Length: 153
Image 1 (cartoon, rainbow, N blue to C red):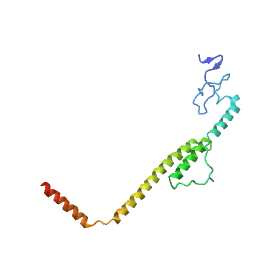
Image 2: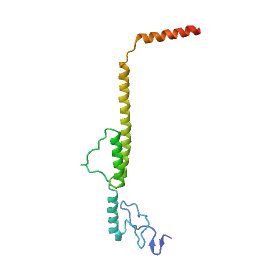
Image 3: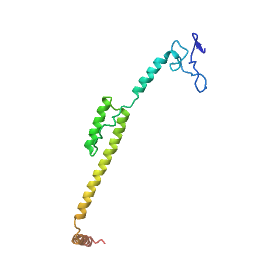
Image 4: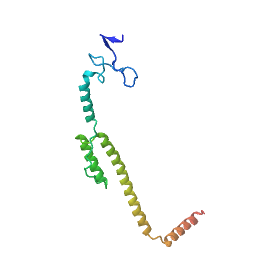
Protein backbone atom coordinates (compact mmCIF):
# COMPACT_ATOMS: atom_id res chain seq x y z
CA UNK A 1 0.00 0.00 0.00
CA UNK A 2 2.94 2.38 0.65
CA UNK A 3 4.22 1.99 -2.95
CA UNK A 4 2.59 2.08 -6.35
CA UNK A 5 4.21 0.37 -9.33
CA UNK A 6 7.62 0.21 -7.62
CA UNK A 7 7.63 3.92 -6.71
CA UNK A 8 6.98 5.45 -3.29
CA UNK A 9 3.83 7.52 -2.74
CA UNK A 10 5.96 10.15 -0.95
CA UNK A 11 9.19 11.98 -1.72
CA UNK A 12 12.23 10.02 -0.60
CA UNK A 13 14.35 13.08 0.27
CA UNK A 14 15.18 13.73 3.90
CA UNK A 15 14.62 17.09 5.53
CA UNK A 16 17.87 18.96 6.22
CA UNK A 17 16.96 19.44 9.88
CA UNK A 18 16.81 15.66 10.44
CA UNK A 19 13.03 15.71 10.80
CA UNK A 20 12.43 12.70 8.57
CA UNK A 21 11.37 12.34 4.98
CA UNK A 22 9.94 15.23 2.96
CA UNK A 23 6.44 13.73 2.67
CA UNK A 24 5.40 15.58 -0.51
CA UNK A 25 4.03 13.70 -3.50
CA UNK A 26 6.72 12.75 -6.04
CA UNK A 27 6.61 13.95 -9.63
CA UNK A 28 5.57 11.40 -12.22
CA UNK A 29 8.30 8.85 -12.94
CA UNK A 30 10.44 9.86 -9.93
CA UNK A 31 10.85 9.05 -6.26
CA UNK A 32 11.28 12.74 -5.45
CA UNK A 33 9.03 15.80 -5.37
CA UNK A 34 9.69 18.76 -7.66
CA UNK A 35 11.81 20.47 -4.99
CA UNK A 36 14.11 17.50 -4.32
CA UNK A 37 14.34 15.78 -7.72
CA UNK A 38 17.95 16.18 -8.95
CA UNK A 39 16.75 15.91 -12.57
CA UNK A 40 14.48 18.93 -12.09
CA UNK A 41 17.13 21.34 -10.81
CA UNK A 42 17.20 23.45 -14.01
CA UNK A 43 13.39 23.71 -14.06
CA UNK A 44 13.37 24.52 -10.35
CA UNK A 45 15.89 27.35 -10.78
CA UNK A 46 13.92 28.77 -13.73
CA UNK A 47 10.71 28.68 -11.66
CA UNK A 48 12.46 30.45 -8.77
CA UNK A 49 13.76 33.17 -11.11
CA UNK A 50 10.32 33.64 -12.67
CA UNK A 51 8.69 33.78 -9.25
CA UNK A 52 11.23 36.31 -8.05
CA UNK A 53 10.65 38.53 -11.08
CA UNK A 54 6.89 38.23 -10.77
CA UNK A 55 6.97 39.14 -7.06
CA UNK A 56 9.22 42.14 -7.52
CA UNK A 57 7.36 45.30 -6.53
CA UNK A 58 6.74 47.76 -9.32
CA UNK A 59 7.52 51.12 -7.75
CA UNK A 60 8.44 54.51 -9.07
CA UNK A 61 12.14 55.31 -9.28
CA UNK A 62 13.52 57.40 -6.44
CA UNK A 63 14.17 60.19 -8.96
CA UNK A 64 10.42 60.57 -9.68
CA UNK A 65 9.27 64.02 -8.57
CA UNK A 66 6.91 64.33 -5.61
CA UNK A 67 3.27 64.89 -6.52
CA UNK A 68 1.84 68.18 -5.28
CA UNK A 69 -0.83 67.39 -2.69
CA UNK A 70 -2.11 70.80 -1.66
CA UNK A 71 -5.81 70.39 -2.43
CA UNK A 72 -8.46 67.85 -3.44
CA UNK A 73 -7.68 68.27 -7.15
CA UNK A 74 -4.07 67.25 -6.54
CA UNK A 75 -5.17 64.15 -4.63
CA UNK A 76 -7.66 63.19 -7.35
CA UNK A 77 -4.95 63.67 -9.99
CA UNK A 78 -2.56 61.40 -8.03
CA UNK A 79 -5.22 58.71 -7.58
CA UNK A 80 -6.11 58.79 -11.28
CA UNK A 81 -2.43 58.56 -12.24
CA UNK A 82 -1.89 55.66 -9.82
CA UNK A 83 -4.90 53.78 -11.19
CA UNK A 84 -3.50 54.08 -14.71
CA UNK A 85 -0.04 52.97 -13.54
CA UNK A 86 -1.58 49.84 -12.01
CA UNK A 87 -3.44 49.14 -15.24
CA UNK A 88 -0.17 49.40 -17.20
CA UNK A 89 1.69 47.21 -14.68
CA UNK A 90 4.00 50.05 -13.63
CA UNK A 91 2.97 50.02 -9.96
CA UNK A 92 2.18 47.04 -7.78
CA UNK A 93 -1.49 46.92 -6.72
CA UNK A 94 -0.39 46.71 -3.07
CA UNK A 95 1.46 50.00 -3.45
CA UNK A 96 -1.55 51.51 -5.19
CA UNK A 97 -3.76 50.31 -2.35
CA UNK A 98 -1.53 52.18 0.10
CA UNK A 99 -1.66 55.29 -2.10
CA UNK A 100 -5.46 55.04 -2.20
CA UNK A 101 -5.71 54.67 1.56
CA UNK A 102 -3.31 57.52 2.24
CA UNK A 103 -5.10 59.64 -0.38
CA UNK A 104 -8.35 59.09 1.50
CA UNK A 105 -6.71 60.16 4.76
CA UNK A 106 -5.30 63.24 3.07
CA UNK A 107 -8.72 64.14 1.62
CA UNK A 108 -10.21 63.91 5.13
CA UNK A 109 -7.44 66.09 6.55
CA UNK A 110 -7.91 68.65 3.77
CA UNK A 111 -11.64 68.70 4.46
CA UNK A 112 -11.05 69.19 8.20
CA UNK A 113 -8.62 72.02 7.45
CA UNK A 114 -11.20 73.72 5.23
CA UNK A 115 -13.86 73.42 7.94
CA UNK A 116 -11.46 74.92 10.50
CA UNK A 117 -10.72 77.86 8.17
CA UNK A 118 -14.42 78.50 7.59
CA UNK A 119 -15.20 78.27 11.30
CA UNK A 120 -12.39 80.71 12.12
CA UNK A 121 -13.75 83.16 9.52
CA UNK A 122 -17.26 82.91 11.00
CA UNK A 123 -15.95 83.41 14.52
CA UNK A 124 -13.99 86.47 13.41
CA UNK A 125 -17.08 87.89 11.69
CA UNK A 126 -19.21 87.33 14.79
CA UNK A 127 -16.61 89.01 17.01
CA UNK A 128 -16.76 92.10 14.79
CA UNK A 129 -20.54 92.39 15.24
CA UNK A 130 -21.25 94.76 18.11
CA UNK A 131 -23.62 93.54 20.78
CA UNK A 132 -25.64 96.57 21.88
CA UNK A 133 -27.15 96.80 25.33
CA UNK A 134 -30.33 98.31 23.79
CA UNK A 135 -30.98 95.09 21.89
CA UNK A 136 -30.70 93.06 25.07
CA UNK A 137 -32.86 95.57 26.98
CA UNK A 138 -35.56 95.56 24.29
CA UNK A 139 -35.76 91.77 24.38
CA UNK A 140 -36.15 91.80 28.16
CA UNK A 141 -38.95 94.42 28.02
CA UNK A 142 -40.84 92.47 25.32
CA UNK A 143 -40.53 89.28 27.33
CA UNK A 144 -41.74 91.01 30.51
CA UNK A 145 -44.73 92.51 28.67
CA UNK A 146 -45.74 89.09 27.34
CA UNK A 147 -45.42 87.51 30.76
CA UNK A 148 -47.58 90.28 32.25
CA UNK A 149 -50.32 89.81 29.62
CA UNK A 150 -50.51 86.07 30.16
CA UNK A 151 -50.39 86.35 33.91
CA UNK A 152 -47.38 84.06 34.15
CA UNK A 153 -44.22 84.78 36.15
